[in-house]
Length: 264
Image (cartoon, rainbow, N blue to C red):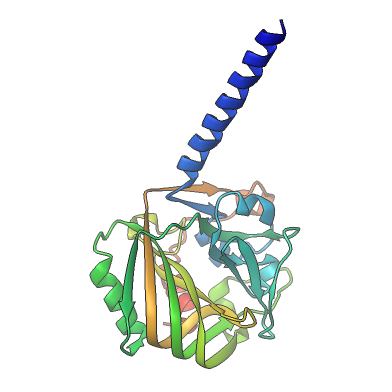
């Protein structure tokens, strides 16, 4: 009887390990979204997804804190928030987010670039190496920057306005001759709406005291790491606000305005 129990225990342990391994393989190369981009852009700023749950799906990514209180970065499994004051701090896992996008980042390819690159030049260079127009790419850029301009929104109260209607409330931060990390993604047009298509980056300084959504940059000497993701999953808010939100409106121009920090 004792041997039978031992065998059952060992079989259970093996099954658990195999199941965990299979779950990890599913999680790897998967882009996980908490919330729906068009809904967030349209004013769904109430938090619903716990940070602890978010971290089960990725150690690398970006998003927003509740009530639009700044910008969120997920880097090396840690959460950081840049507030509208410019203050950047590491967050405990006790909070929640209305919108975030994460993955478990494993660099597959690495590129070095030691010449000055503006934002548009950097994106053109990325286009030249990320050639699958329908590919999902996680991108980590580390290095030295002559200039990084970021932004963060202040917290807001209900009734919430769409993000593009609050561009005059942005707070901008200018960093000079700084080292740090760009955390971001290139999302294909086929995922527009559920995600923000194109390039989307947040910045985190080496000393973890500065950050935010990237508006402009001048890179000096950088290393680019890339992983191609092969699937995506979305966790949708189960709230009355989400259930009644009108998704028929085309928000492409609003998203461009929000990404660039100015009306198009």
